[in-house]
Image (tube, rainbow, N blue to C red; front, side, top):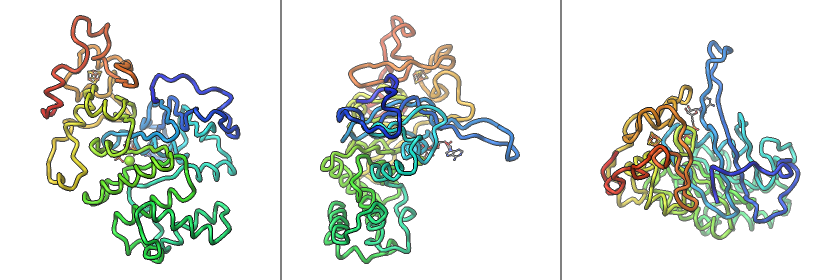
Amino acid sequence: MTSTTLGPIPVALASPSIPVVDPDAPLLSVRDLRVWYELKRWGFAHAGDVRAVDGVSFDVARGESLAVVGESGCGKSSLMKAILGLNTPTAGQILFDGRDVSALRKGDLKWFRSQVGYVQQDPFGALPTFMNVKRILEEPLIINGVDDPVERQARIEQALIEVKMSPPAEWLPKFPHMLSGGQQQRVVIARSMILGPKLLVADEPVSMLDASVRVEILKILRKLQEEHNLAVVYITHDLSTVRYFSEHIFVMYAGRIAEMAKVDDILDDASHPYTLALLSASSDPDARNALVQREVPPGEPPSLVHPPAGCRFNPRCAFAMEGVCDEREPPTVEIKDEHLVHCWLYDKEVMGDRPLGVPARKELVDGKPL
Ligand SMILES: Nc1ncnc2c1ncn2[C@@H]1O[C@H](COP(=O)(O)OP(=O)(O)OP(=O)(O)O)[C@@H](O)[C@H]1O
Ligand code: SF4
Ligand SMILES: [Mg+2]
């Protein structure tokens, strides 16, 4: 269950060393998260802030997969880095399994790293070139106290089999440069799974791969998620890839969530003008459709230092209402169960007698770009 309208996190759970007792509690809770980067003039004078993530709240249940979708620069990686504890939030809170991520101390950090796997965008850059596959997969086990070499070998082989690198003996002696991009990414995934994490954060895991292997990698991630009851936060700019394994989708625009819903609701009943624009621009990860060209959403993403007043999408929105969208922050409206839209078109007071929602939505979905 995910929502932008969630209440505060219970104080008792906000302390770093108190484990969650309730197995039904969300694995990950993010509340009003802000990640701003300070801009400096002449190296010291404050010149503004890049508001990369600006008030984002959601929960991820155990075993749930969630896709965060949006254009380049909308704040996806900043959100991901905050979840991984690599970015300190400017404001807000992130709780993982009942512990405040930004308050983790040394001992807790080791525990946290074993519980949260990370799949990077560039597999070659993510792998140490001087280590072979065996050493790459063995290192996290050694660091985390798996002292028995027989157990280590068994876990390494199991991890390779799970990412479809069989027989393991064939791959263990290879160095990253001897592997294709798809094979490198499978090693990255095996490494991210080797300690048995509860959450996997995958930042554009297939965007640098050849179209022919993208679907295969997404299916491996989906299988791992199902078999290990793994929660997955899958970050992508490409809406068309999310159907391969996500249950929920967040569409992010300029540091905020524009729309969130179950996958089918977004793909069949997209309701935010930006989501509709993204849908009409998305390509298909299936190699058979690799040559199909689509429109991109027209216009430029806004400045995150001086974002537009009102709705941040208003300068690009075909349905922007003067005096409303360019002045007031839109409300988040639950248009049906677990389907939230951050847009004035769904506000009864503003719309008055007019029908709620995007006019002529069907024609837009049927292929006419906005
Ligand atoms: N360390 C940083 N210092 C200053 N600005 C940053 C920093 N990291 C990111 N930004 C800015 O924050 C904004 C969001 O960046 P982010 O990398 O989170 O976007 P993204 O959605 O992941 O984009 P992409 O799809 O291109 O990876 C961008 O304007 C970016 O230039
Ligand atoms: S609030 Fe207004 S500008 Fe923003 S998406 Fe909705 S209609 Fe468009
Ligand atoms: Mg990114």
